Amino acid sequence: MEIKISYYGRIEELNKRTDLELVTNSQDTEAIKEYLGGTDKRTKTRRQLKEYALFFVKIEEGEYTEIYASTYSTAWLNAPIDRIEILYPQYEIQGEYGQGWETVTIERDKKEAVKRLKEYNLNESQYPHRLRRVWTT
Image (cartoon, rainbow, N blue to C red; front, side, top):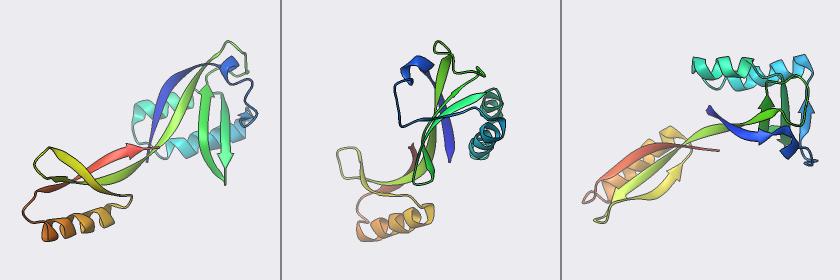
């Protein structure tokens, strides 16, 4: 699992959304940073996470489904805000049937993907197959 941080806009753009919770309590913000920081080993990303002072989060079934963050300690409407996306790996098995590579199936688990790739290579040995890892939200 990795995270992707991108500029979203200003806090005022989130102001009318009733499905987001504002998180400013230092213990809660540190818990969110630790959750996110534990998912991504890139030091630049970890450094960037430390600078955030507040979060807007959407929680569904106990999971963060949307996360926005700002380096400002108060929710000033003109403050810039970033969107943080949690990315999960998935594995595409692709076949080359004469018109370029095409995805034949997708697996979330790498072991299952390797198993499926072997099955395709065995059952369709006349065509080349490959495994690709892609990131998705």
